[in-house]
Image (spheres, rainbow, N blue to C red):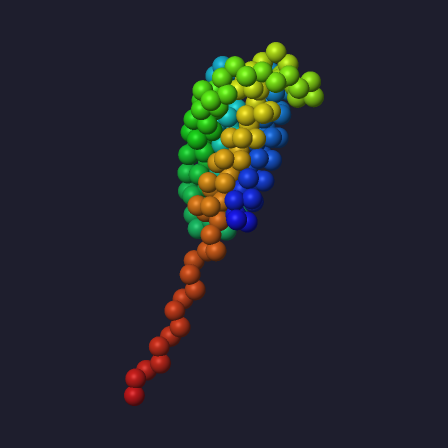
Length: 140
């Protein structure tokens, strides 16, 4: 249960930071919004799970980031399909007034980050390699 919360917290926070920056920059739709969601997935893939300095190889975080970019774009498409044209104008969030929820990265970014963060934490955040078996004493 702790891994789920940790993935939700780390992924959601990273998604919220990048999503808010994207909303402030005006990336509400189009190819640049998809690049933003790919970046959210990639950053979450790098920073969730086992820390970078404890990875066995450099390829593991790179693969998590590349896979996360695809997951970020896929979850953004899913959010557009599920949320549709629901409009909730919240003046404190840049870009939310007059746009559907699915076109506001400050609202969709934390969802994308949290979902992929939970997945990465559950997959990669294990206890680590098993302890070596104790040496057997010689038979007499």
